[in-house]
Length: 596
Image (cartoon, rainbow, N blue to C red; front, side, top):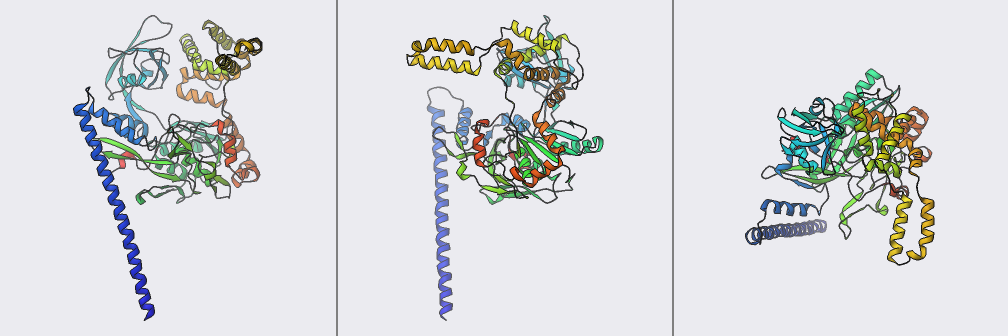
């Protein structure tokens, strides 16, 4: 009898507690609804008063859009509002790989707009346009003074529509007039695939938009069947990501069916999803190497992270960007869209590689990187130690290419671009990419060409000396230091001609790559760069050494721990985590076409 009463009492108490929790939840929900209603009422009232009473005429839609953008800017840089006018561009950037245009990249320079790249087999190429041509008119509209975005809109249009383009080619007095029919411009996710030696395949994957996995599959099968490769390099450097499901499919080609590739976790239970490999794998045994760098992000990090956690591939390069956030595109009223971060994703070992904390910002609004004290240790299938909160750290770290000041100056002033333009105008053809090189004759001609441009630059030490002079002058101490300053400056004075010889190898690579692109376009540019690519060389050597490859994946010796926080700190100068590099894409949880 006493037990019955006690159980009854406990049930009553439990009911009271649950009832209290329900009431508390109800109160909180009511408070939230009140706050939402109140703030919407305030926003509507302010918007109405501005429209009616503000002293100057305003664009009502623009004011509201700025307000929406301001609200979203408090969240993260990947949550954004897309007005109806920007939907086509949004689809091109995040979903589709095709648009109507002429197939040329453009750049702004000294008030003019120039063609910077021509894509082979597209309308601009067929019309005989070249990189270096200055665009003067499009359909009678003057181009000088416009920014590249405005000119790009003039070049784009429906497939098979006509445009008239007037251009000026350097070294030619007569203007170029072309009637061009726009075409469907399709850029593959896989920009190149081939072999880097007799046995190693190479696939360059630039993005994860529609059909990315199909393109990787086709490239791999062709390399395996026709080239009979026995190892593979997947190059994800500079790949800003794209559609999450495409990344899952690509991992699934090389791991067991049913393996959990990535898990996304959001506040809403509907956004907690485990993505698993499905279908028959293409090859679970072939040795793999994945190339990454600081611009490898989003879906690229899902692939690299999964392969690393499964001990399925050796990761080579530099630490990746660290974007562990998933976005979904929601349809809004009046044909607008909201791309919103709905979840974080976690690699198979359980780590979230998000490197910036947008929820806790500094006073200036900048997002700080995840504190080392908050970074946790996780384990791969073979027990290797990996870490969250800081991107994907490679199994083999390589130093990124660092150019000298003289080379940077050539690049910044586009001297390599201008010389390649003149070279192309004077030479109708060159030898194949594999055999073409910048010989003594071409290099000496380039140096002479530079002298005519009054080429000069500042070394890092000279820049420091300028800063020293500026600071000491402000402190009114420069006159006392001037004799010593001038003596030191004279010793540091660079010898331009000597630098052009000292740094010839890297200048040669830069020049060769640009010249080759004028004849063999994007494929030629990639082939040219592969000849000097240290990351590819490291990957080839690792794949070719079976003992080393196995040791890395088993976590032997120095390969037991990958990217411990102290190592991350030691390499902090190599990475910029303050803002997303250009090209960073989003993990789109559900492609636009499949949304309800």
